Length: 475
Image 1 (cartoon, rainbow, N blue to C red):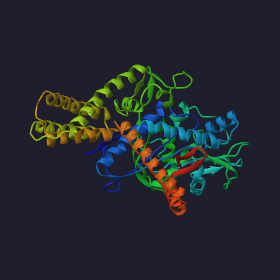
Image 2 (tube, rainbow, N blue to C red; image 1 turned 180 degrees about the vertical axis):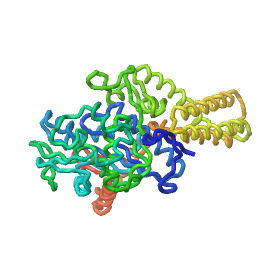
Image 3 (cartoon, rainbow, N blue to C red; image 1 turned 120 degrees about the horizontal axis):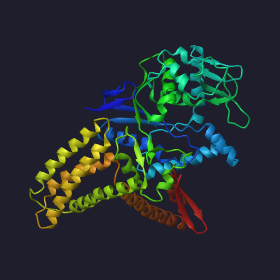
Image 4 (cartoon, rainbow, N blue to C red; image 1 turned 60 degrees about the vertical axis):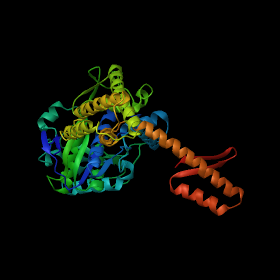
């Protein structure tokens, strides 16, 4: 029975899906104005394990993660470099995918961008204005009316008076209430802008996720996630907008999961403190799987302190698991009939059950990792016994190996080597295909040559005929 800690109710709850056998997830993505940092990586590694858990259990998962590609920080970066805002966004979206690929984070089912969903955002704002939850100013700005939404503050546990007293809100006498937030921002010179009923402008930050999650997952979905820093104001405002829009106070996301902060030597990571580390820079010193393992060794809701020492410890620990993986692969290639691994098989079955029990307690990857270490130890013991002359039990050991592989698959470990092997195989296959095409061209069999080229293009591979030979690349 899966239990998750729901930020909305502040307690662990038994997970009850909206549809049996299906799970829908929306996770707030990055604002691509810079290379992703280690703090960005944590929620995506966390949700990747959650997705893998559900998939391994046979659930049908739909996972949406947005890109906030229209934002003040992107605009500022574009002005600083003297380029278009879209160039900045495209560059760092590419950087995000490269970093997450190195961490074995599987792609989301869809990555909607703000710039591609402007009509839906405008339609949602317009509906909120019609229902009295938002108001437009003569300037063309549109604000959400927080006092209209009776449950405002239910996610963060705050009330409007406390928020107003403690928040650093820019004073704006045009707003009805200091905590009212922008849904639409009137256009400024040099900024990206779109036509709307209120004049040219662009969306505010919070409305985008409401519009895109409702569009791609429906008015009710299972999980909404992100970092703890998003609880207020971002996720609080999402709830206010979305429930006002649908008219359903029990709609929108049913479970809210938030990961803890990453600190650096027990101080919050920030650029101002010069303790800001991008994934790209960390990967120059440590393999991606080490970074991933470092993140998973701590429960997602707990603070995670980042340091070279901690990464080195993670590397040492992961190497221990990898040694067992190599022993497992070596033994898996052997044959033998005996019952010497019967006890190992039974222990593996129990440890796998314990592994899932850990994950079903609010996705406790730290405890799940400890169960994997326990199985690693048992595999090591059996390996030593076999190398010292004990008869090998292929049937019994296969069950232990399957359990170890399953743990690794759910945690997303030991995929780098297999990926390199796949890349090598693809390279050899492409050499063969290109050679066959060249033979067809040499024989002036243009129909076959073109069929190969067009078929590869449909598969996402582009052939380039150059003076030095044929090159290929992924589209």
